[in-house]
Image 1: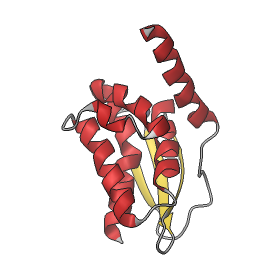
Image 2 (image 1 turned 90 degrees about the horizontal axis):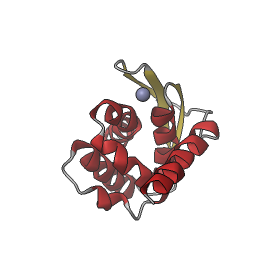
Image 3 (image 1 turned 180 degrees about the horizontal axis):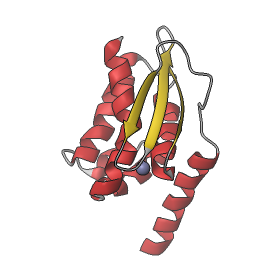
Length: 139
Ligand code: ZN
């Protein structure tokens, strides 16, 4: 059972990696982020009045890129306040401050809760969400 669950989670990650949501066509004010410990790179932009729209492009491991796709999918189409609250929730789980179950109602993002237990990979997964927080707070 646990093996099956892992396989489903892996498939969700690879699906986002292969077919990124909200990829490309960056808006103005894009920021660059990197995670030197793994070689992950992201450029991200936030546009939109009222409801925000995230776009990103990047290269790196499947977790970093899939996490960016999940971030853009989850946070786009929300108000700044909603998006920031969700980003803080995800980052709280990555830091170990929040129970991983806090992500259960967030769709595909829930698979990232397992990564929070892997100190090496959590930096990969957190990159996009740290960028989202930076962009949301800058506005
Ligand atoms: Zn990585």
